[in-house]
Amino acid sequence: MKVRVTKDYEFSGLGEKIKKARKKSPLTITDLASQAGISAAHWYRIEAEENKILPKETLDAILAALGEDLELKFEEE
Image (cartoon, rainbow, N blue to C red; front, side):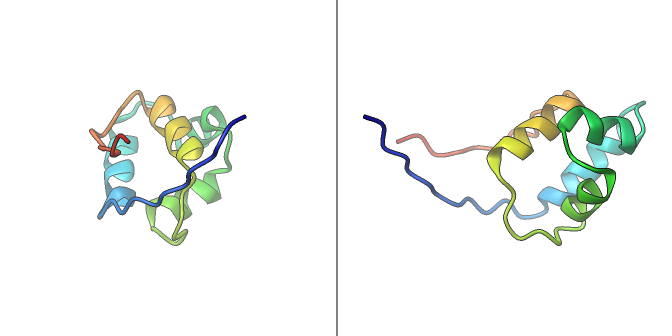
C-alpha cells in the first residue's frame, strides 16, 4: 500500500528564475512550453507567478525543457 504525502514549498522569485533561464535558451517559448507539455500562455502565467501553486511535475517538465535545475532544494523526509 502506498501513502501519499503532500507538502508545499515556497520558492521566492521562482517565476523570474524560470524567465531568466528561458531567455538564455535558443528555443522559443512556444517550443519550450510544448516540450514541457503546457501552453505558452500557461508558461507566461508561471513566470508572472499568477499561479499560486505549481505542481512539481510541471516544474520538472519546465526544467527539463530548459535543461536547468535552478538548484531548488526540497526537504527529504
